[in-house]
Image (cartoon, rainbow, N blue to C red; front, side, top):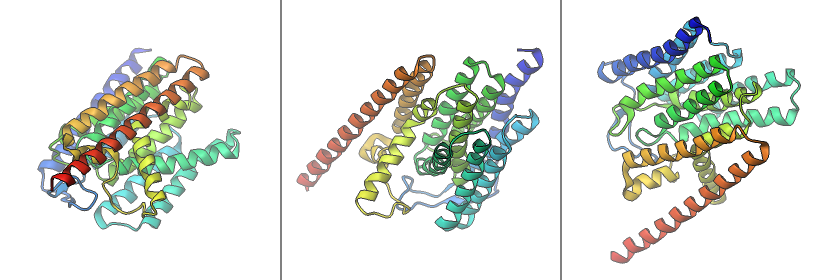
Length: 334
């Protein structure tokens, strides 16, 4: 690694952190962009909180990527910006689900279509597009507890960066470490008790990046497809299982609710802080195991994925059982 790139490798994440910290501090302390998140049926907070923290996150990442000429496909640049704009509009005015979903679909198709040129089959391209749409939305679903999405962003993209570094791709590592650093600055203001929320403007583009950069790392040969799925599995499993359960019950999945496992854990008395710390610990362990397995063959990675699937199933069944017993005990006391 030459001295010029060594400087960029260190300076870019550091600048991302500083810019994000300054921007979010300004949004918290300054009387600007007072877009508040008022409590609703989905909320776990009881008082209005600004939901503009994602603006500082997004701008710091974009500015540093531009300054250091990050080499990324144009579909990522455009998709990232377009999702940030439509999500900010939703934060301000509240857009309809079809309008938001249409933009998500356009961004996903634009990103996945470039793989057709490289000779990937149609099934793979469709799968990538659906993954982009789902990750963009589930990241937003999971941004409902102080410090959770910010910490998951720091850990998840940190693992992307470490894996890229181990594979010898310094630039791709730097790109991911910039996201990690900006998330670290955001977490300074978002850990319980949160002074500011990420908002759709931060959560939706970050979900897109989790899927897009995860796919791009696979295309570059830096990791297998299992790695990004395992790293972000705490988010993926919670959001997906909750959605499936609501579908089977015939509920409207687009309506606000508090049925995600992380929401139920907070409400069970564990609290925001402990729930976030539990999420960090889980993601550190599962992500660390994914990075470790990346040095082994496909069979080992498959068995690891199956193992974690079994662990998640046991955890969810145990918590469901505990909550039923707890609810029954409370009802008996009344």
